[in-house]
Length: 283
Image (cartoon, rainbow, N blue to C red; front, side, top):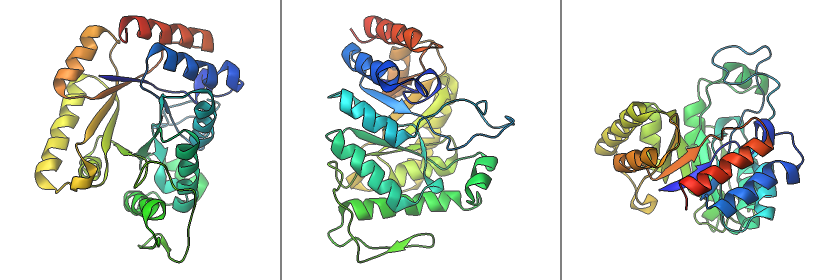
């Protein structure tokens, strides 16, 4: 089982100076044996907080690409995951440039976690319609892979179109960083099967994880999976206390990676959590 750490760019780590926040915890996580660290994302949050907003409006969140570029500079092996980036809120070529830069600077360690978004006020503030966000996401991923990998990049879709351009450097990982599709819905399962190297389920207990795995199996039976994508890798952030028994149970279900939510309100407490997991689950 691969073990990752969530919220490297947010909360107590989202507004502390790098050596005292994200950098410190990333170095500690690598030393403890964590396989990966993961960011969250909301470009803006509703003020005042209203459902379904998950966080209060003053909750700090560093930009994922910026945070992971910093983490890349102070680590050597740990993988760097976006968990997730809300893709339809971004210009796909600008995002492709940002993520290619992180992949190059990190030596090919990026995991591209993807989400379609769900927070209406955030889309409204950015001037992006929510209604077409799923199709935008699919086109943007296709377009990003084109600019990352084609000798003569070209793409023609409803929401993005380009030809006669290049963007270098390309990601070290080809045809781009692995796409890890987030979401607990039938369309998310379809996108996972047909266009993603992995799937990510957030804040799930055992029963909810099993329902998602069943949904992924149904999608796999219904839709063709390109051979180039390989086996679908399953990642879950569990809503269960981390113990060896918890890890074993998720492994038996077919989960490949657990991305843990740290138990701590400041960097010292998060560092203690990292050390505890290193001692109890990773050594």
